[in-house]
Image 1 (cartoon, rainbow, N blue to C red):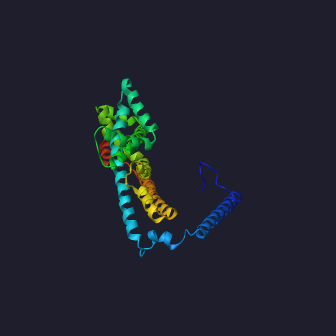
Image 2: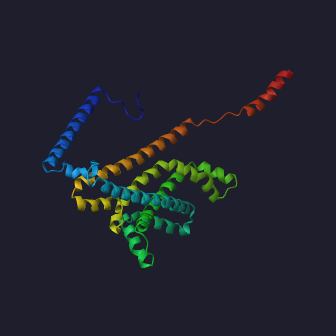
Image 3: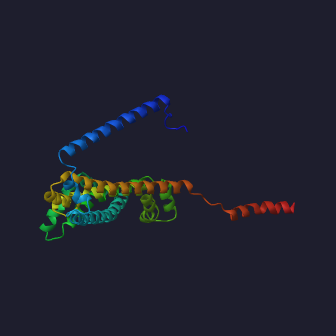
Length: 297
């Protein structure tokens, strides 16, 4: 099949691509072999190092995975709460920015740009320090959720606003022609479609939220990475435990990425296969006078 975007590679190009792929694979395998050999020479592949994570009969196996399981649950709880609050606040920010009038639009835009420009770690730390100052003593979960929500809500708000802006202008005009107000057009016509269009991007943002929960260590929140650090201080196996933590994070984020791809494919397929049904009754009415005229003739 020929592509309308680029020419199909010829035999020489395909041969060069194959050779480059083989050479790159050999180099990567060689590098991996060197790393494994060096780790083995330094005693990093022994049962004492890997047993607490991989060997069920090891004395520390159950305790290690019990701690990691609790920490992983705490990480996922923080991620889910952040996603829910960010969706709600982000939707409100998107609606306010779309419907704002010039005299206060600068205030909304300034708020959004301020939070977009702040590092996430700063928003978390500020929430952690400000809440006790005003007399609110809460679990470290909430400063983490508040800090992550402040940052991710403006990102999600911009995603939703972009989704609304990408819709055909005719849909807005059609809503106005039916007598709907600007708020009703947004709520009933534009926002549902924007959520559908931008759903893959919203799911991808969840990947960012899950990874950012590891910043909870700065406020002593018992999340996944902080708990792994505590276990490392006892077992003295940082390479092995960080490798396990990395694999778990990769598995979670890979699954979320594949979910985003699946949703995007299903939405694209639904858009391509949408068929407008025929109106047989209208056709019958239109054919009626012709048939009657033929009968009268």
